[in-house]
Image 1 (cartoon, helix red, strand yellow):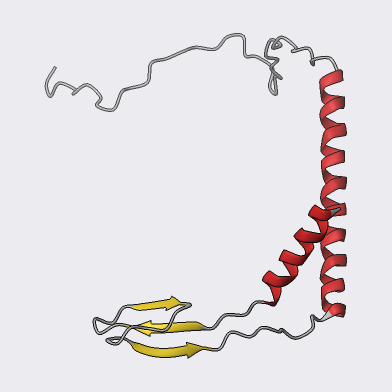
Image 2 (cartoon, rainbow, N blue to C red):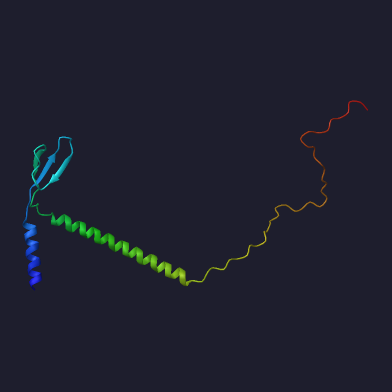
Amino acid sequence: MVRTVSFLAIALLAGAAHAEVFRCTSSSGSVSYQEMPCGADETLRVVNVPSAYPAPNVAERDRLFQREAALDQRLEMERERLSREAIVRMTQPEPQVQPPMDPQYAWLFPPVMNRSFRQRPGPHPRPQPFMR
């Protein structure tokens, strides 16, 4: 009990403490922020840090929370669907691979029985003699 009370007292005192912030610029141009005033060779500027902030926009915050909850619900439904599909795929047997079938050809014209195969001349036919 004593620990809880002392912890709450320290937390309240730490929240109530407000320190000034000093912005110090040295002669070389470097900037530093500190709780103590600047030295003699540095330029001093007090930074106004607010201790109280405006109230949050509750309606906008609630709208964003509802939108995020709807997104989480859609993502969870998608995860469940993918999980069910994976379980179904794992429980089904592997599909049997059919051996390839022999190619089948369709004859569009009946075969010619007495077909003479003559040789066609190549790209350069033989030269004919001039005289006989």
